[in-house]
Figure 1 (tube, rainbow, N blue to C red):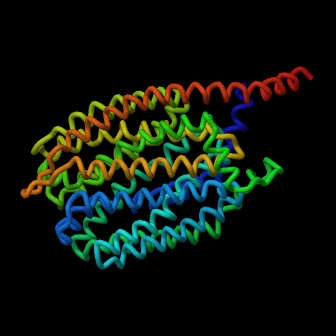
Figure 2 (tube, helix red, strand yellow; figure 1 turned 45 degrees about the vertical axis):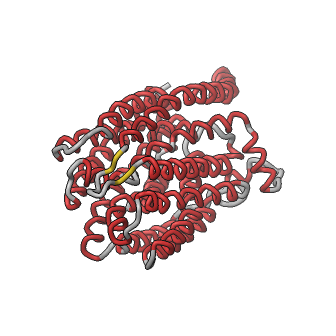
Length: 429
């Protein structure tokens, strides 16, 4: 038995596959950074343009809505092209949108720039997950997702602190210039070194109309259950994070020049634990890790959103535990979602799933802006109510993911049965 496992491990983790994991992680980092950099910049934008927190929430939500719409429109075409070319096209558009943010002179222009960025950026994550599903087996996708989702923490360690420093010294436009330059370099590497990813084009001979493919994907009952779970999965981050820096500054008493310490230290621990969480989800079970992460997250959200002025060291400890819970949910649920669609539907499923995530997140962000009220002193009121809403969605999602996990297990056992039968036949010959 050990002789059959060793070649499998070698075959999965080739040097080129390591490159794919690295480049997908970097891509995720740049896209997530573009979203997360708005969190610390919120303090600058609200002050410089004299806008209300609900208006800043709209800056975040228009990205999500445009990303959601473009993802649905792109779903029908997602399985019709080489995924490398598809990725490069949308990454180039994302770069263009980021450049518009870098030169935005007014609030209205920034809204327009975020729409353009969302149209292209919202599809990139779904393409990356489709690539992971094409290349890696389900048994190791948790580990792969553990590395790819490190981008979330890396954007805190490198992006947010640098973004704050750049904004303080060169203005709030400068972080977007940094992202644009970085994305251009990444795009060149993808064009030169990534191999074509077109095996999915050979799976079926019928080339249905893109609209037909979209409708069939949306009407699949199993896919609909996954989309429903994704809707609630998106609530947490989009509700709490956009106003997170403002809450930390005015409610928790953290100075602006201390925010990078909070994001950096908690991000380091998230990066260190990400691969271990992914590996553990492959061994113990993805749903088991999801439940554990959800329980940790619910407890920490309840504590964090009810805090007042708090010492920095204590906030750092609480943030570390909170982000570990969030990472456990993200890594395990992402790996589990990749097992839901059939091979010929991966691109469409991931694109629609990403769209639903973005739209649900946009609604959550807009609702958060309406619930939270900023007083004249800058303190945010009713932030704790957001925490209770997030805890409620986490509870419901645990139940929904339970049924989704059962479907994946049943599907995996059916697909592995013929393979096991063939192996037994070969062994007896």
